[in-house]
Image (tube, rainbow over all chains, first blue to last red; front, side):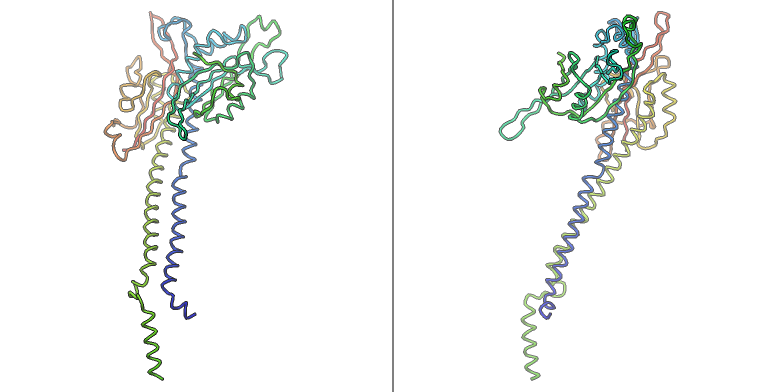
Length: 247
Length: 184
């Protein structure tokens, strides 16, 4: 007891060290708070912007006028809504061929302001494809477009030295080999940032109706945005989409 | 006996007071971690408060831009300047200052020269502009230490009505809505 009484200086420094430990834990908490504060809000804001942009982009593509001849829209004599042209195109053979390029141009123009921020895909999906598939949940995709950044990296032994990105565009679903599950798997892989969907009805021509088809095919137009992600073209999830690069 | 006790006591005092520097000097080693802890605590507390305030201002700006753009986008279809101005007048945002309007889709945005980029109405030659200030965002202001600028872009469609060769014509063209907000 006598010995402890004589060690007052050591007790003081132990108290100080305890105080230091408490302060350090408080400081750690402050640093943690500092780094985390607003992170979820920032992520939410980014995701909200992507969703809002996707919704606006979809409306813009569907509401816009287009020229049926090669003249600029404002001076053209033949102006129509792009969606009307797409319906007309689909009605004859259940494919979108004649106005495919007009749709692609419109989508690219609308997505131009965020082309460096997001990769995206835009597709039209039709349900109840033909009489034998009615009620079976079978889909076709008459239009499927992807725009993504392809990254080329130069590596030395230890580090990635230089990264170049190139914008690549694709039409997918060659030979109707793609399924909804393939799209879902790909989207899960790249991680969705924002999306918008709109339902749309496609009337069919009299010839098709006479052959037993419905008067209308129900479909959806969908746009999905994600943050650019590195993957090679031979990635199995991407390969399942059966894409062909647009030159 | 008494003498002996005093002698021993004197010897003990002398032995125990080796390196004795006085009441404060004796606690000097313990003061070093104390001061160190206090300095670290207050500096990290100050930096946390600074970061908190800075991020809060950023969020307020972001929220204001989202509110303004959501109101101006509406259904995504602008039928006329009157329609656009009606939506604009319904906005009640005092801070931050903002300037927004419609710009051709293919035009690159210069947030320091937005006024010259806004689309003009065909009939009235008035711009599709919505702002809560007469002040203009300049490069000098942007270089200021405390200024925070947030800018967002959204696609929209604008209905244009005009007469060509005596015929009324309506075209719906894609444009972009730009909202730039800042605090001075």
